[in-house]
Image 1 (tube, rainbow, N blue to C red):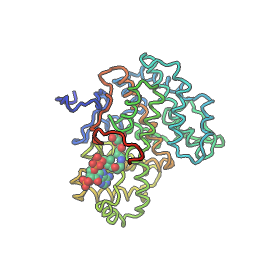
Image 2: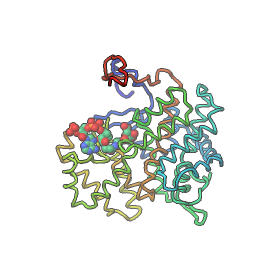
Image 3: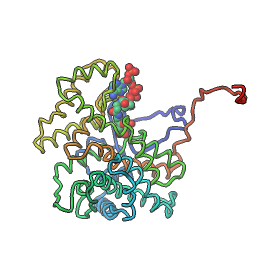
Length: 391
Ligand code: SDX
């Protein structure tokens, strides 16, 4: 299988869990979904097939894939009443704030008819979330830019539909560019799951209380918003724009070494080697820019120079700081025409399958349940109350 493990029971305190979904070897820079290397899936698979794999544990047969795809496609519309939630937000609200609110609101439409201990109900919820989160994400963008919502079209594939709902308008025919669709598909595959990261652990912890899956996913979206987690691609692109020119790379790197700021898109809690997703992302970045005849894109050249400079510098080497998945993803998303305030929303669209798969695994088997985290108390020792007159 993936190697012989000798689990140290002490390591698995109540705040850890076991899982069969994603394997990471941070020192070797390995990432497997259900045993399949991420590089192979990114190159040879498609996003819905990866969703089936993460949720069910095996790659689908042709018949299973067709049934799964059709099921998702026919659940992409949302209840028309849900559209009213958007009007409660200012137009310039951050899209992640809207996503937390509207995805959480799905609970009001589905949770009362849901028994999370029934596997069929869990599967239906997982498919509803997988199908509807992209629609809500596109609606969030349309609301932000003041354009009308575009309903999903069943003739499109999953990723084509997301691009259609985001970029089409009633006034113009929209034909998705297959190279750009493939690039976005790869980005979704790379971001689909990543073991027990902050947002997935949040979903598991919320789910361990028996909360409905829609509320749990909304809690995951909230956790993903943080700049040290899902918000890093937005922060990395802003960093590249701030550096502005290759000539400023040495000065900026010095600022990192002087601890004035961190290098966004670099470093990882687990990877102490190259994040395998970063290499695929760099290649995807080049392919998209080439398709768009933007090979000399300034920010891409700047990112590569920054990576080259850092990877030669002992400050980064000694701390095992390498590019992570967020370092190049911002450049690709920008080239796809996705606005910077939607980068983490796209991450949430991708990670929904990881969240629901891990939630499903946990509810299905107590052994996979995350325990109630404990603490090391370092506060005051016991003491008696002091009346205010004596304080
Ligand atoms: C994601 O976990 C996941 O799976 C998450 C994710 C996913 O798919 O879900 O992979 C997505 O969140 C990727 C990470 C995105 N975040 C960023 O790119 C933000 C920048 N990175 C840092 O915030 C940081 O690297 C962390 C938080 C991601 C990881 O920090 P670590 O590895 O726990 O390291 P640390 O904070 O303990 O720091 C160790 C040393 C320190 O220096 P010293 O005190 O030893 O001198 O490394 C330094 C840190 O100051 N350091 C950095 C740095 N990250 C750590 N220095 C400069 N730039 C950085 N980015």
